[in-house]
Length: 386
Ligand code: SIN
Ligand code: CO
Image 1 (cartoon, rainbow, N blue to C red):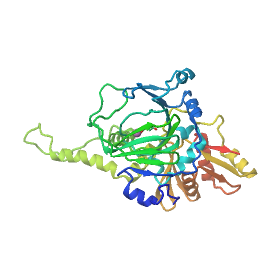
Image 2 (tube, helix red, strand yellow):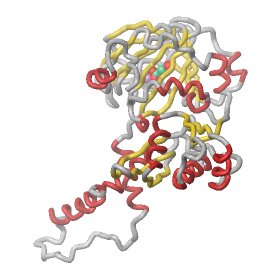
Image 3 (cartoon, rainbow, N blue to C red):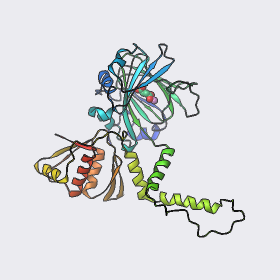
Image 4 (spheres, rainbow, N blue to C red):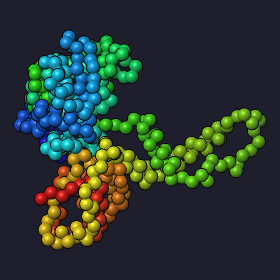
């Protein structure tokens, strides 16, 4: 297990006592952190078509909030006020390979729970206002200072200010008031209220964000997955029907038969596992075409591997996970696609999940491994580097 970023608290203790339970402030969690993205690069990213970004500008007294969504243009930044604004850019780890190194520090949480690395820049007084998220987040201060007010659990019914474009909790009484300096980290569990306010004119915060599918998403996605493969002949049947007193009654027996339809599909471990793996590795931005300009064949890869070792890098936006079927067989999931693997290919898949980059040595591969690498390369989940 990797070294704990929680100081005296071990990763096991963090998971037991804090994860999804209560906030944790860690002073100097990343003392040597060199932030790979500064304010100018962040603004540059927000000009790009494919990059998801927001600009939140407050009124001079900080009370009212306005939100604009990117992509922005240069003029947007030249016309900003001196204070009380913040730029937030999602999925910076997808676009800046060095930024994904920070994410690697959090691999003690399963890959499939990770969402993205968001980076924000705030001017003096800037922030998005008091709110809660439905996700766990680690907020790392990389530059400047930020005051965090933290505390209380909130939900959909908690009072919030009407008619504002961002969520602003009213009746907000934070339990903690912490000023974070570069290297400090704050963990916020889902639904815990928080409000970050820039306390310098160069405040940068890196948010390592996790995700958890809602019950609504789980139910819809699984039933779609099952439903798509069923024929119209798979239907409710009742050859055991008996005469009812009142034909208007939907009997407990009928309800039970419907329940059995659901539980029948749910009891199929392979089906449930395959759906979950594909669902949670679906790309964050499915419309982005990641495929290489030229696809490769297994013959080409074999020839290349006869000549030299090859260095494969996991695409920064790629989502890889696996579930074990037996000791020697697993289902590997990459960006929404599943691969049934056995033997040495299982080791390859496990390595791809664990490491951002791997070296494939000359002659150390099977046909199945070769096919897996070609498929992953051609769908843009991995790329080759010198
Ligand atoms: C930030 O402004 O960097 C974090 C926003 C949030 O609290 O979700
Ligand atoms: Co938040």
